[in-house]
Image (cartoon, rainbow, N blue to C red; front, side):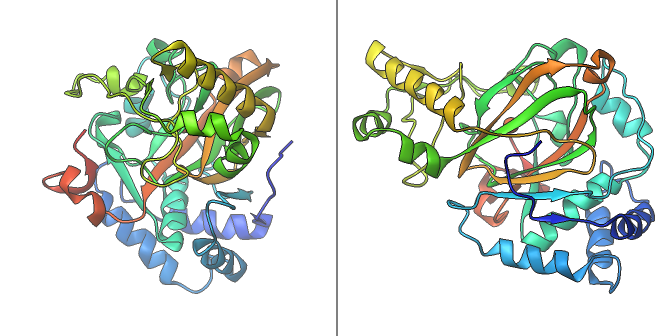
Length: 334
Ligand SMILES: [Fe+2]
């Protein structure tokens, strides 16, 4: 089931050709990102593995108005044929040790390159890894993070961080059809249309507070202090929405009523996707808001092995230069 239109579906033959080509990339992106990127760029320059229709779609999507069209949804994308079952105590370390092909990573990067997007990492999140897993981890199963097994409330990725991603791109690696674990989206434009003018006015006031996210707070590296009060609406752009369901609170009862109104609206407007293996959803992080809803579990065992991979990307590394690690141009120092 999907409530978002499919923009492109790779045929099985196209999938085979790209997968085989991406399997040839042996450079480890977790150890040597620059060389990995060079391999992907070399592959993009080749005639053959990437269908022209897909290149054309990316070219068209690159210039689309992301306020009106924040999504790109692809089916039957290349994924590693063999994926290890990850140790739930430390899935990220286990992945780095035992995932020895990089088809998913290469596809995420290939897409970013074709779209003119720059993937970034955060030193406080998975030690700065660019390729991140949406995969349960035992100690964070109940959290509101990429390592949760439960529902994650509506949010934008790193919305109150000093480097906010422009895009969040997610590729399904392993998921059971029997588990209704939805990734849902609401466009900013639909939410703004839905809310009344007095509500919108109230949301522009600095009367809301959102603590930093669970993953950042659980990091030993943090030096962040208390997050400041903020408006929900407005800021970087006129339509900017800074909101994390059940975390963002109003600092007084009237502001809290506005928060409750947003929550109600989001659940009326949401579009659901069941992301399975080979499904890819690219979303403009500042033009839509997303959640994960665990609705019905038919295969309990598959819940803890569910694995999506994602990157968060920005338009330009240069724009964020002052926040980056001194020697790592795409790793945010925070
Ligand atoms: Fe997210």
